Length: 124
Image (cartoon, rainbow, N blue to C red; front, side, top):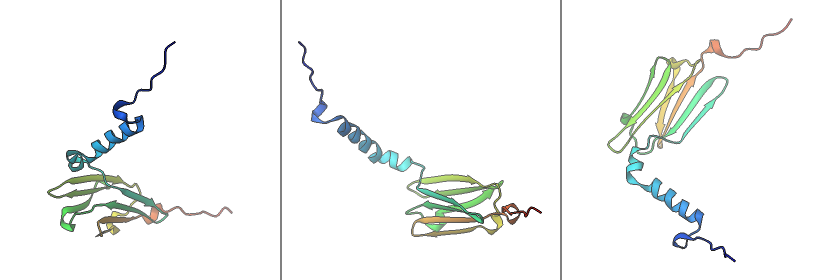
């Protein structure tokens, strides 16, 4: 009769092996320098769009916010890393955009165009 032998590479369970590969991948310095994502929150209300992006260690002069063909473009670049992201809002009034960088968080508030606000029409 054959007996079943549990395979246990390097005395670790399967989850331990996966965790060690995961930790090694994310801690690689090259990956840390080249990643182009940042935690981002986007909120839409009836009156505006609000975008918050974590940009720690970026100075105000290293961040650029611009609108190109009704697309909001955010670029951040310094000697350590760079970041680029675009947002498209169909009914935005970019002329009244408010941008702030405080405590490592970039906040962009774009009001909606008043003509595109949903209005209730009374039925007679």
